[in-house]
Length: 400
Ligand code: PLP
Image (tube, rainbow, N blue to C red; front, side):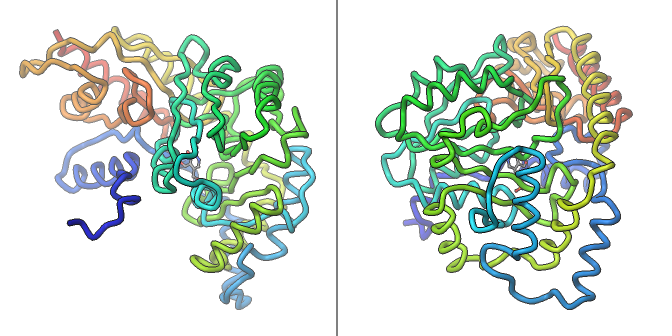
């Protein structure tokens, strides 16, 4: 019998983490691989933020912090939510976590019991369903369609809600599709949610500043303030400030949930790294002057990748409204045969062929809940993207 709990035996390793290991292993073998599976900005943390971390260490800010995070950071987050999102939260309503990922996991673990359902629109960020399973809940996957730009429609949401629904997980811009929502589209989802008071909303806003569309970005809670008492807003500094390794995320929401999160952290991790918190204070309190240039860079890469991918027979790519991923359709390659005689039956076979024949790493749509697609990251240079697409084109040209 396994010594590992059934809760943990239900889940699987994150495919992105597995891909990163695979990439490192192939590199060690001396293979030349273009990595388009990256899930983090390729920019460095801006210098003034790095310096703030060093200064905190030198000042002796190397001790435990309050479990919910330092007051300075919670004040900076409250000010950010007011300034950037038009939302009123006090530092009391906020908890600092080890990345947004930890906020999401802990939120589910303090609210979900066996038999409860959590609605996850697909394509989804790979961790959501496994987090729900690890908390004894039941993921309810709602398929979104490419024709709808992979958007959750009000009809699909309505159809997925049952008396057992605990949460809707709402991530926009979305990993892996880059999907964004207009205020009118959010309004339509809010109308559905208003009819079902048992449903709480977990918003994952981690890509909020990486947006290319001209539509005004508004938070669901600005569209429908009446949802506030059943919404937990999750965000962090990882993607906006290129601070993935600092591990600073946060949640803002109703008192009972923030209280339970605080209690769980008090008995598990305690407060997050003190110097990372000090750096995040400076990040949130200083003008993000670097951001327009980063977003313009992501946009240029997106446009290059979309153009090159659409030149490849069997692949069809849409230009997403945000984030730094593309989610191209590869249905035209299914059923084709490699020179070695292997028939490509799934998107997993397709990405293995790209890796083996082309030396390009992308991730199979299977992991994200919608096939046949693959996820390509644009968090790398235009040169790498061009070379990656050239190699994919060559790998496709070998198929018959
Ligand atoms: N949410 C989404 C949709 C993500 O793609 C990621 C990271 O890839 C995270 C959350 C985690 O962010 P953090 O580094 O703050 O834990």
